[in-house]
Image (tube, rainbow, N blue to C red; front, top):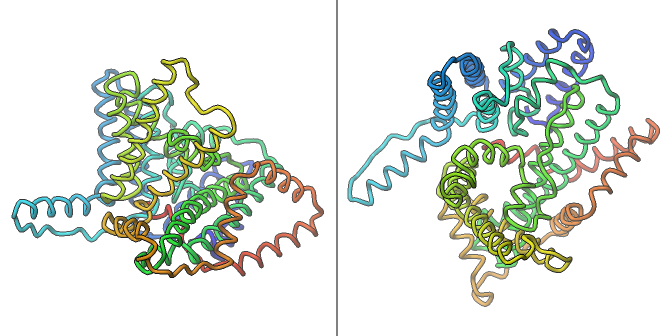
Length: 475
């Protein structure tokens, strides 16, 4: 059930109406939302609803047992059960074939003919997101930051909540469960904000991400040897903005739908391409995911206080790379970002030891830092977009060809370039422009609001290139 489909529109209208009807009957309201969430997930693949339920049950029981255990050994045992089942299921579905293929290649390099069977498993949509969301619950209980809930229904709804189950934002139990136990006051302003967020999300997805994909990104990555280095470079920049508009658009829709239903979800982006360093980029990009790795992996293995901080950073960023996909291109993606963050940390330490500010000061140094950071982020995403390491290498080789020997084909379109320019301007202009526009829309008469909605729908249909899935569904 795609967000862009009529099916989802009808589904959301029905859920919204039932949610409003049972607003003052908490148990009935939760039952409706839980049933709706499982129906939504089963529309993608009904066979994996049992997997979602299993993950919920295991972590619910483990969380209770961790809390009730009288000794450290019992607490660690139940945490191991939670981690083993959750990460084991994730590894089986997402990484098994990668390990099998890597083992076969390693054996072949030593002269052994290894004919290892490949598992025919379809990756459950959203598995990385609901795995981490449920794991955060048991990890927080183990660390004494969260108390277990007595209601399995509440916990199952937390894991399966339909706006977040496919692509986040990864919500912590302490952010969501209290809203089930003590619902937020009914607020017209929250619903209006939700509607504006949903509209913004659809504009990002359909008018920016999908258009950039069709006009620039997909042709370049489908056959890089056929195009000029300039076209390939622009396509790399376009992919960075496609990815941002796609995932932040999904987040806006998810947060907007949650607001319509009376829930608040965490924000996930803070103008990431305004970052002045790669470290700063990860503080702005997909913060619910990067925050999970920071809090539960980086700090868990010692952070900057125990062990070698640079080794801890490398482990964390390789894990972030692998979370995005099972392939050596994602391992290398993590290594590149880990190397940059390690270098920046070392450089900050050196500057502070000399009494210099850790970050660039003044407009010109900050602009240079922003441009340099964007180049690193955008170019490393060739590894992210290419299907494997060999394809990424072929793309880079085509992009680095001498101009005289390279193909001259550069099929830029006015729509593609205008969309990329608009995406850049919107990203770097002040966010207050959107806030002013949103307030103006909400203050307008209902007739004008309806006309604006109809006009926006026609524009999106005109620019739409079909119901392309959100990119992060594959993770």
